[in-house]
Length: 125
Image (tube, rainbow, N blue to C red; front, side, top):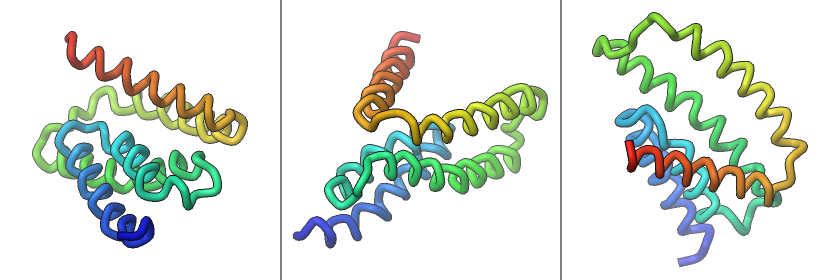
C-alpha cells in the first residue's frame, strides 16, 4: 500500500477518532489530528507547521458540534463562558501569529512537552 493510498484511508479515520475524542472528553481531538496527520502526510507536507494549522481548522467545527451536543443535553454551564472564551480567543490570535515565527523543531518540542505534561496531570489527579 502506497503512502498516498494509505493516507486516503487514514485521514478520514483520524478525523473520526478526533471527533469521538473531542465529543467524549472535550479535548484530545487536536492531538489525534496532529499525530495522525504527521504519520499519514508527514513526508508529503512541505512544512510541519501545516499540520498544526490544519488541526486548528478541523478543530473549529468539531468543537462547535461537541459544544452544541453538550448544550442540548444541558451539560454546558453558561456562567463562565465569557471568562474562558474571550482570553482563549485572544490567545488563539497570539498563537496564530507566533506559529509563523517559531521554528518547526521548537514547535514540535513544545507540543510534545504540553502533551506529556497534560498526560501526567491526568494520571496523578
